[in-house]
Amino acid sequence: MVVTGTVTYAVKGRDLLRRQGYKAAIERVTAGERIGCGYGILTFGDPEKIKEELERGRVKILEIRKA
View 1: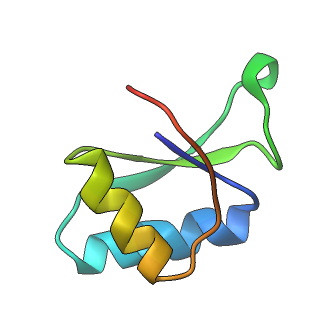
View 2: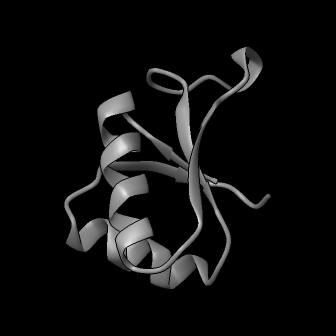
């Protein structure tokens, strides 16, 4: 899961990854693990490639977690 700073970044990142052929969905981060607004992008694939795509698309990433 890629934790983002806002729901806006989560939506932008999800859409960007989908255009690149990844399956991606927005998921609420649980209250005990809350960072920022509490949203992240759930996707599968190479974390480094996903991170590069999101950074290239100017999506602010707070944290990358293993599923």
